[in-house]
Image (cartoon, rainbow, N blue to C red; front, side, top):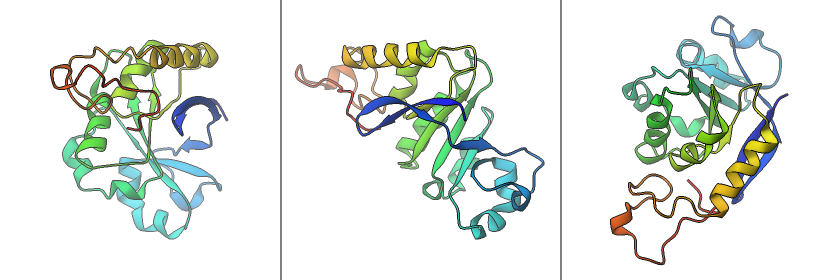
Length: 185
């Protein structure tokens, strides 16, 4: 299991990753025991079988997932939802995370997977991500230190637009409102 940065109980920590991404062509009943993130197509084809197995299940979404596809799901049923970044410059997963948090009121874990870089973690957190699986060539300890430092210095204090953290745009915040690291998305 690979290392994962998670935001839990008001703090950022390294954690073991106990989720695996199910192959697109796998039948859920043939997978070994464990926590599985199912691609949307697999979920749609095998939902009843997956639910009948009485275990935690998650969803893996490609960057090209449409918001209309998400609104058809009972997102609160998923223990985790992984959003894929096919390349670091592709920001569609940011929009999906914000949609999950704001419109669909998803309160579970949203994790970033794929081409995830340390300098993007704070911005991902602003849009609702709570877990990050970095690329294999990234140093998780250094990324965690960078994220803790950025959150600790309240680097979001002067973010102009509202997001999940902070929810109000700069012109609507009073001088004493600052986003704190223990705010939950």
